[in-house]
Length: 248
Length: 218
Image 1 (cartoon, rainbow over the protein chains, first blue to last red):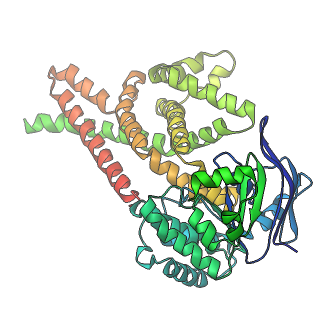
Image 2: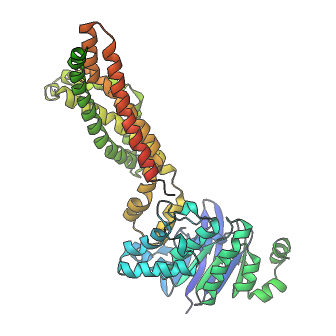
Image 3: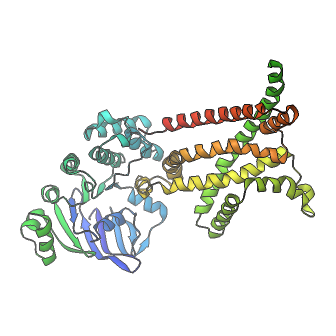
């Protein structure tokens, strides 16, 4: 059984239908890159999975538990349990500006109270080390570069040991010279078999790191496949046009 | 000279005590009350939101002096219930200041909330925080930080507004200054009163500057 199973997902903002009958699935340890033009619905799809958007129809199943079943959401407590299996990294980092880097990492696990504080602190240290920011533990986000902020955000998402990490255009708000350090961390995670969905404009990353590329346009999945085939031999006309413009 | 000085300074300092007392009562009660009003305005229960907004409009839209006069002298004149609404002047003044300043603080805090990015709520949600945890750990600390300069400004205004007590005959700083001016036919007490107000606002300014540095998050 797939780790994520989406079927016939529909989502509208008013009369504007942004997702039309989307179905897709994600296997454990798989890295999927979702690409497509702006307004294609790729971010909305990602946000629906973790309940940041309410969908209007269809089903979402995470690790065999329903988040939405035929357009009906499960009970609030169950929503929390299901979405708790995922972590999310945002385009604009969304770090808490009034907390230090270390506090950003430790707040949620400490409030959720699943582990003793000392374990949480060790975990935070390990993760900061992993993203290469040990020396920034006591800095406030305002004193970090964009790339550093995003690496902190990734570490913060990892603090809750998610089964799946969702990335919503993680490098789109960064200066070009800072995207590398973030992509490197994501690549390391992929190599450690983290299950990830990455909405991105980084074709290089999609090609190199993803196991599968999904191309969306106009609220539909137009085409998906392994990167090698997808980039060298796209089938649909819209995919070809998109790749011509965005990928050389 | 020294003798005259002693004669006027002590009553004035006593009056200043009244000023300081009113200031603290008004600040301590109106800030939480203002925050509750902010929540009421933002409430999805429309009648409550509408009521809170009307309250703020009325309190901000009419002079504080008028409100003070109404509470001190107007309420007791109401038929039937009037006789139960006779307060001690100082108590009445406290009520007036609290009700008025709560409206201003409510608007200040509302502005603070508007300044918080929606991404903060989303980050808190995906990290599994409850509504209460999100409010107390993520939103309020940021809201207070954003609101701090405006709160500082409002507090300084409050110190100076305490002079309105003069109009409802509560013996505060300005009252004693005016008494001395009338009695001794000299303007020196006005200047002394001015200096005392200035010292109070300076201390307050320094306190808020310190708070702002302390919560700079850098």
